Length: 214
Image 1 (cartoon, rainbow, N blue to C red):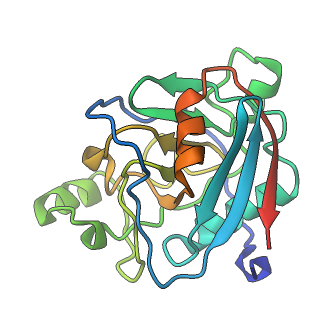
Image 2 (cartoon, rainbow, N blue to C red):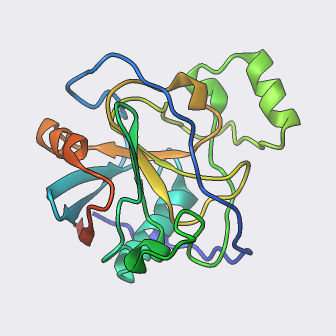
């Protein structure tokens, strides 16, 4: 799988606290994010609980995928922890401060920020909501094939518009439509066994390594 062309430089200032809001709902079994007719990148998160297979979609978020691949290739995520887990909602990781249990955990990143990659119309966000989000500072790319924040979605955690860095979250049980238009979804959990592993993750579990499959 070709992914070298995806690597892009993103050199902006770091800051902010990465978070998403809690919501809960019915417990589905399989990841529901779908992506058709698109090149994908396969990778595996080897965790202290077991392996989680993921798929990344460059057509949905090319810069975000490039950033993730770059960080993975440098070993950035190795030894980081899932520092935030909310039952029936999501697991969150990717903060380098979690390697040492730094009290500032939740605010760390790679040393830069980059913009969101979201096409709200492609995921059914209402025009009124889009206008409200744009007024709040969100800027959208209507040429992208965005993915919704559904079960199994792999998305960027952030502290508001255009504050992406290294932290990410995976939705565990129910779709989160209230997050559509606010978070860049750049991949999904690849299979049911991996989805089960995601649901077994507890706060403090470690990402031992991340491997990209060609």
